[in-house]
Image (cartoon, rainbow, N blue to C red; front, top):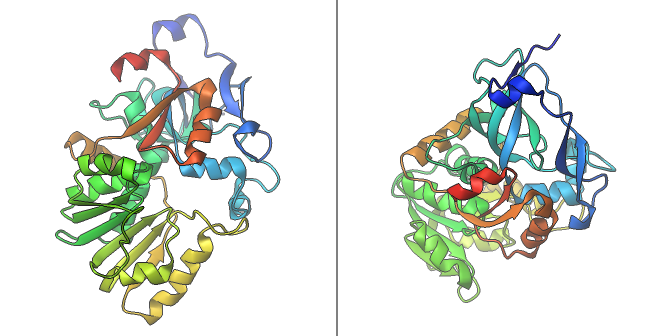
Length: 351
């Protein structure tokens, strides 16, 4: 039988947790029009999970793919062939633990946490303990909520996959988005010389994050071969592998992050596969990866935050009920940094 602890505050002492909650749900794949703001049953947790009272959530490109079901590889990967397996949307989360599964030892009721959850666009969300870390005290819940998915992806791309070293020349294509804004700051903190690529209106943002050089992709061709880089992070880009190779040094590394573009079946994965198949036959290393949410990575991000090397960039803020509009903005490509979803009103004064 599952044993849980319940938040020992005055409210919990006088009334139990509600049986229902407000959430963003969907029962089919599609555009933002499939998202509905409804009252649904509060989730229950397993022994290795915790229940989080959500204060804020973050919106990332992966959440859009789970909403649309495109490319179809998303469905084959286990998220539901004909409809979403989890009807409540959202992954990034920051909040307070209100219940703890009997097998969980790293957290207690009342802990402030951030990380990955199963349905964070809701008042309550369940999460595996291994996907959470304690929230840095220097961050608001909104700031913490935009870090996990994008921050972990950027950190893994630079270190575990890209193997960045101090003084290396690093090119970050797509530097103004959620992953990109984290990658620019982390690369600088790791001692790299960073060139950041973004659109005209977003150049000042990436420059303010510490980039040594910024390039406007609407007016300049960064892959013309005049400057080469030891490591390239191509975040959600559509540049061909051949062009990217021209910008790499002999022995340099290309890490393709995300899979935008392509067809409805594989999306940008086709470009990733071509790069990986070519890699063994050339002097340059070309690879990709699927980010994994683990508390050790989130804790490393927390250290960068506490040391002042990483500041979350919130581009826009939306209420929970307005998630469909937030998703439309993300799909339109107008968002800089990361979008925060406000779930509890009291965090607004801490912006």
